[in-house]
Image (cartoon, rainbow over all chains, first blue to last red; front, side, top):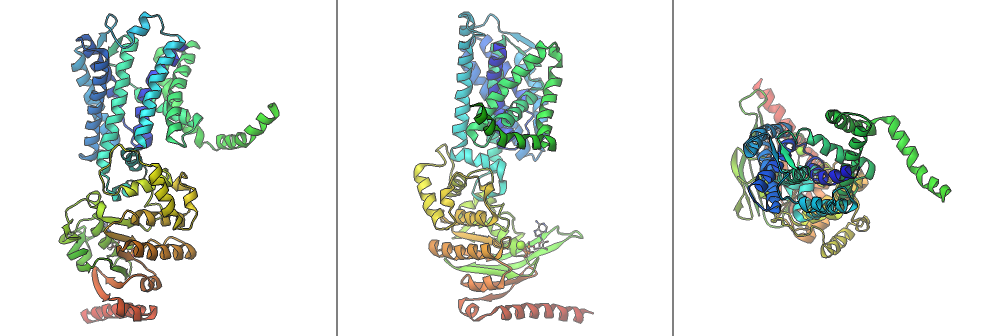
Length: 300
Length: 263
Ligand SMILES: Nc1ncnc2c1ncn2[C@@H]1O[C@H](COP(=O)(O)OP(=O)(O)OP(=O)(O)O)[C@@H](O)[C@H]1O
Ligand SMILES: [Mg+2]
């Protein structure tokens, strides 16, 4: 179960990227299925070729940014529908990822990676490694929070909120979308690079369906922990990512196959999207909410 | 300050839906001039404002703001010159963002945006002062999401955001039309105050004759893509709503005459 929490905290970086496009820019970006693997591939190849792991991981971030820029250009300058632009980049990345890796699977087991110190000290799967990954996830969360409150970040928020208004204030919404997609895919690729180091290999298929995991984290997290303020919304995404991995772990322990996981992910997202619309659920939630403080009082 | 020369605009040219929205409009505004624009539906009033803001480009003619030819610039590229309030109270603000964030974005109109914090203590103080002038109590709700405000409050905020960063031109397109009479009167009054305070060169479209006469220093009437009446402050001050309606009737009559003559 600690492994699930660790994974959830690393994948939270990817989920924060998905949050940036899906919630802030209101742009459903499917590039991530490709750019996640790109990040893993770049980091793995870099490390195998003797780059310092931190440099290889940073390189993965920039590779992801490049992928995001391509989708952004296709959508804004090429006027291609956003979903399709993402799919096109994702498909193209499959070939590019294979080129980068040279083969479908790259083992990293004997390489020195960012995770090696934790592993060699026997700390993986302990509270200390969880704390380390939590720190990393929170650092990126706070960076994103800060960015979204800068002048540029406000313009990006407004681009997803009221495009005509922010254009009338002198902002190129095309540039904002390209920048947002670049940052988002940079985070996703960074996460891919870290996951490759954590699990000890990069695989051409590791990004498949990653968008669903990201959406699940964002939607479930925000449904449970709220999203009124950016600070809370991003925290909810991190917690949602952990929760998601824990649920998957529980499903596995209950006897489901790893191959069933994609189906479970998809069902989770559908449930999280549909349930709040269902009037019975809304009534239930409304009835529970005012009752909650009263309950606490009786308990106390 | 604003020079529109020989602007023409045809939508869907060469098709059955062809629509000549502007048929050669010349309009020149001196600095500080406040022009109210009236005219029937489809006269081309909004189209003229869209030419200035850059939302639409003219087929022919030029748009010059304070000596700079902006005809070929995209809307966001000329935003630094222009403050704008739309008819729809939802259009001028970002609903999921707070009042202070909306104002911070407006303060940066047309500037290069970097990584400085959008809302600072100093700016917050300024926003509080500016909001106090609206007398709506919004200065106590800086962190409230704009989507929670009423239409009138949002429109007053849009007006403040359009004016307080000192644009060269203020564009108002029926910005009181969606409000109830009381709120409309409030926003009208605020418009007069803010234009006065910032000495803004203003182009305001309205369907309210009363408002067109009381506000502004000059009145322009449009019909079928042309300016057909242009009254300076003196002649405008002698006009009544009845006179304006009479002018409208004359145009309609003239049109009927044309038609009868063609038959
Ligand atoms: N984007 C557009 N595409 C096609 N036709 C347009 C467009 N904008 C305006 N028109 C047409 O141009 C003409 C002038 O429209 P405009 O919106 O300027 O009128 P208006 O004077 O603002 O009218 P109203 O009082 O109804 O707002 C109308 O016939 C309208 O149908
Ligand atoms: Mg109009």
